[in-house]
Amino acid sequence: MTETAYIHVVDDDASLRRALKFLLESVGWNVIAHASAEDFLAAFDRNQRPACLVLDIRMPMMSGLELQQLLHGRGIRLPIVFLTGHGDVAMAVQAMKFGASDFIEKPFKDQALIDAVGRALRRDLERRLEKREREALHERLARLSPRELEVARLVAEGLPSKTVSTRLDISERTVQVHRLHIMAKLEIHSVAELARLVLLCQDGDQQA
Image (cartoon, rainbow, N blue to C red; front, top):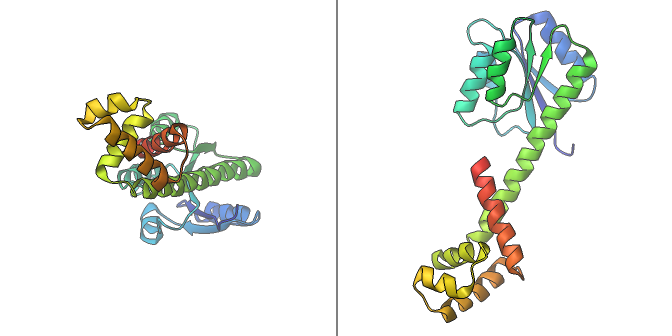
């Protein structure tokens, strides 16, 4: 990975917390250990990414599941690798519904945890890159006037100029002029490129 990755380990067991930190640092990752969910919330910087969370599902005060739900409510999509015990199947299923990245059952093999954390970090990095791409696409579309944006969306649906003119109650000639301006402003050369750009923006907004 080209960016510095941060792994937040949250576990109330001091000895396990130290062991997890040592293990993950041994493969070159930056690890920040927290004794509780509250400690994590006080220290976490949502812009410190790519990152993931290695989280004990059962802890006093605020459980791992409660922390996950709190982060979800705040719009923080941090990939979480849960550490679970034998009796946590129902909790694990609930956590999956909120997008948990992985589950590692105690006792676990070191490589299994390393692999799970690697997947979680890649997931966060990919989402970060997708967000940047989506923002860049929105910046391009922002070059268009409101009317040009209306025309662009209809043209991207594959509608001919005549149909677009009827939909927007403008002349077909005006639609064609708008199309020329759209292509120039967006620096594209075909309707296929326009459709791809508009579709990527729409899909990104739905997933955000």
